[in-house]
Image (cartoon, rainbow, N blue to C red; front, side, top):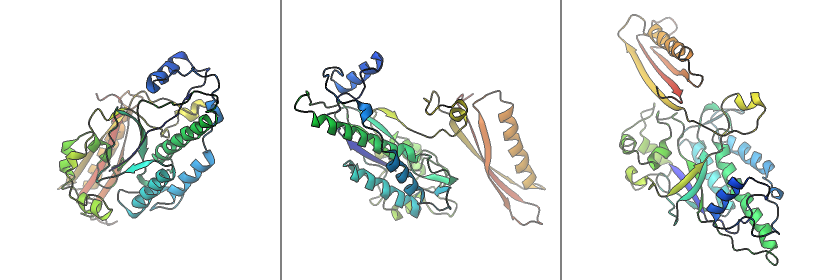
Length: 340
């Protein structure tokens, strides 16, 4: 599911301070349709700051919707805490005077021109951190609030400044459902449906979780799929969004090691997950262990500085301390920016 919030933002003159590079200024002028330097009486954009105290409070409050104790966060798709977190985000959006639209897996807003979109997800793998995904959603809402506060300053100068600024494109905040593959083993569920993945749309009509509960069943119990919508119909037309930017916490050590607060992503490491079952051998547990070591060996010997891999799930049957496993099941995750 994807929660999509669309807002047309007016009077955003002077989004870039006069000292910024010409290339950035040109980009903003092309986006807005107005000359950034037309008026010399604009307030400095830096004078309107992000409300970091409120932002941190929202992140902390969201982290309380968790199936695991603090400081970790566990928020699995369509669990009670996932539904409460969604409601919390929607309340934030309403409070910010945004237009909230939601259907079976995310309502589609169709502006006259493709929109500029931003956002992330709020579902969380077991015992994760409270910033993963969340900062991209509440941060996007706060970014809209900053623009609104700046607009208010512009209105206060209307007697001496030429106003009437209106961006060519709408701005959208998107909260995507089930970025994590925790419950059904399917990652980026909401975004893949928006991208028109028909194979996934068909799979979701029959997939079940570890408790043999179907996706459709839990979706309906959470207030979605009430009318048995065709999931294929939820895809976005390619002309709906012109660009997408996501604020995300770095899940690695590089920024901290270099003493840098922010970086730009230059590549995406797409994950490949494999499920393996062993049965009918003397010790299925040892077979699973050997495969787990083989995954580690492959990653370390790959020569790629970007490749990572792990076996995150390992199950043995019958699971007794004094019984040789007759069956084993494991799932691994390997990712790299180079598909070779």
